[in-house]
Amino acid sequence: MMSEWPRKTIAECAAPEAYATQIGPFGKALVADEYVESGVPVLRGVNVNRGRFHDDDFAFIDDETADRLAKFESFPGDVLLVHKGPLGEIGLMPKDRQYPRYIMGNSMMRVRCDPERLLPEYLYYWLTSAEGQHYLFSRVSQVGVPQIQTPLTTLRQAELPVPPLSEKRAIADILGTLDDMIELNRRMSETLEAMARALFKSWFVDFDPVRAKMEGQARQDGARRGEPRKPSHVASDLLWPGAEAGVGAEGDPVLPKHIVDLFPARLVDSELGEIPEGREVALAGSVFDVAIGKTPPRKEHHWFSTDPQDVPWMSSKDLGQAGVFISEVTEYLTPDAVDRFRVRRISDGTVVLSFKLTVGRVAITDGEMLSNEAIAHFLPRGRAFLAAAHLYCYLRKFDYDSLGSTSSIATAVNSDSVTAIPVLVPSKEVHEALLRAISPSFSRLRALQRESRTLAALRNTLLPKLISGELRIGVA
Image (cartoon, rainbow, N blue to C red; front, side, top):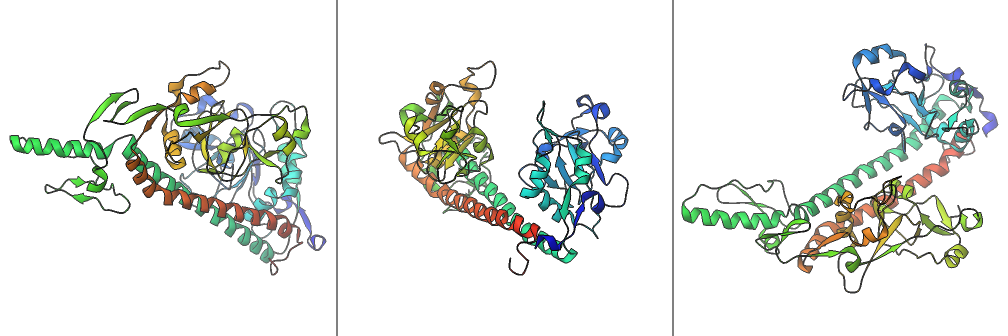
């Protein structure tokens, strides 16, 4: 059990070198005026949120500034923590990284472990465990910006169970394998979504099939007049599910005929710009029943719950952390609250859109849930046939700046503006062809997200039991 493993402080397990535990530059040691367009990346909270390490979204400093701040450099194997702002985020600096050097920003801390005493992966998992998170949050100052009091001392004094090296390695391997599987699913999901959205853009933004038909007609007319052939703009790698793109007599890529035949041969002007002839631009409120969520009064806390047995209640923050499908939320409403305030339930497979503060976050519900008043739900109206996958792709590329803002304090549009979003309505034949092409990707996306939730639940169940010694490796 836990008592069988000795407990040691992080300071005792850190590497025997200067600055093995280190806080980022303090005060004016690094200021925003020193940031440049490119150079050496500066690590911030966004680089360790939602996982081990996120190798993008950097601020940069030049090499001279980085040399001056050399003691704040982070190397592969460093355990990274946020001590100010978005607390509780932990990361591992990977060996395979995009840049040769990284400098910690002023909200970061790091630990460089002695590998004979403590594996960095094991420390990472302890810091993300309930015990590690409780230790950090119990030392947070709530005055002003949330931050850990005396952060470097707090970090060094943290005391954790230290099993034998073989046990630590096995624990890190088990939990790391689960994290790797979750990360692989995330990357596969990004690829599937990108493919589906690229196809949607080709058909409904760039109108490639229409332009292919127009160019084909122009080529025929030009050939009859003896004019030189114009090169086709259609990408040679544009392949459609169920049929391969061919090559024309003069070497140009050609879209499949059965796809091109579904589209007209002419573009006409509209409020959305050029669109295929004969297609309709309708307001979202005429195609969908656009509903808005509700938030019961916070002063009566019994309306809200953290019990998954209650009804999931979605916020804009939840939307921001979701993938294509949303199922996980941080709060729930009791059935009494749903009835009392007549909060409209959102059925499974409904497209939702945030339109206040963080305008433009889009997802599809995976299960029945509720939402706050900053989120709109698009329910098919009457005989409308636009599917969730189509609307999702459309809302992901829509320019919300065109709706204007109704708030001088924060970016927002009102619910009337949401119902007035112009929607290009395709023919049923084109819509059905699109769904045949992208529906398998969306089905796979949902399956991958569900699998990742199962893996995360397993990891979260194993984590405290393995770290505490309650569950031994053989049993796990």
